[in-house]
Image (cartoon, rainbow, N blue to C red; front, side, top):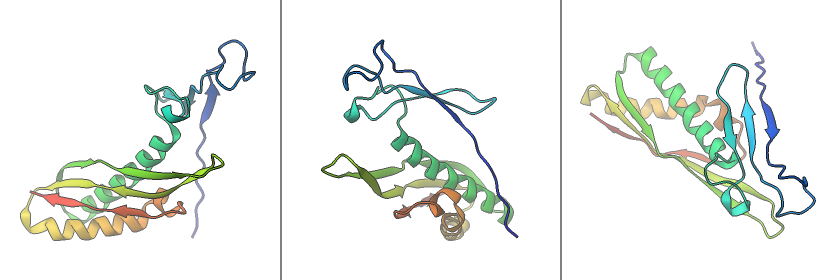
Length: 155
């Protein structure tokens, strides 16, 4: 059985500095992203592309989405299997390749989760659950580039 889920967001450009896009350097790339009932996300482009360094950019949000989805699946699988996790961190990184014409694409994202489990005997099982979580991640399954997981488990 297949089920469909629908997600909506509202994006609003907030970067009109008075003359719209009349000049490439005369407007801000800032915008907001909102989903009903949730805090506003201040976003912009990467500073390399004239963006605001203090805001999230789409590339960071993509990497964060992959990291978050993997973690949520991993914790779900741990709770179902009785594996007790007491801490989880990830320092995920993505590599974007830019072409001469300005277009580009992600060529890889690597997740680096560091998981603390309650009992040493469960460390190998935790690694196996990372593999399973990786297979189930909705966001990773939607990407056309490799998403790798280099997990570390500790007690």
